[in-house]
Amino acid sequence: MPQQGLDTDKNSAIGRFLLQTLGAVAELERSFIVERTSAGYGAYREAHAAGEAAFHSFLARRGRHSKSGKDLAIGRPRRIFDRSKAHKLRAEGKSVRQIAEQLGVGRGTIERLLKS
Picture 1 (cartoon, rainbow, N blue to C red):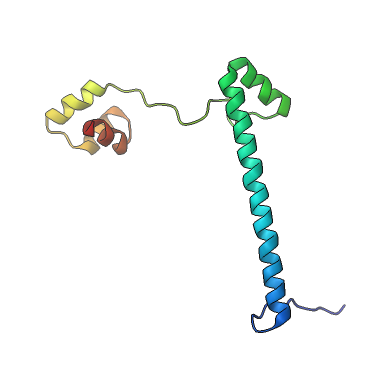
Picture 2 (cartoon, rainbow, N blue to C red):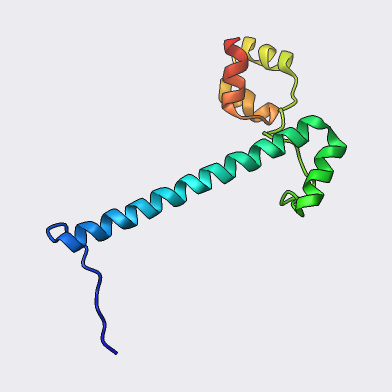
């Protein structure tokens, strides 16, 4: 069976044509992915904003559930911790890292809290 390679040499007309064609197809596919993603995300946000029941029926209609099976809301959950305790520990001279470890939150969370 004869084999013929794809010439992608930029010096030949066929090579340039092939690269431009493949690039155009890749760009088109990328735009389709962006369009589908934003449409799906918008529908998800609308259903979630309409309420819990509508949100679950939206997921059920599409047969989609979160990986955990809990159908969680959009975004990360807020970290709940004693903010006054963080300020107290800082006043005692503890470092941001020590406060974060003691309260079980990230360093960035403590840094943002102490800046405000």
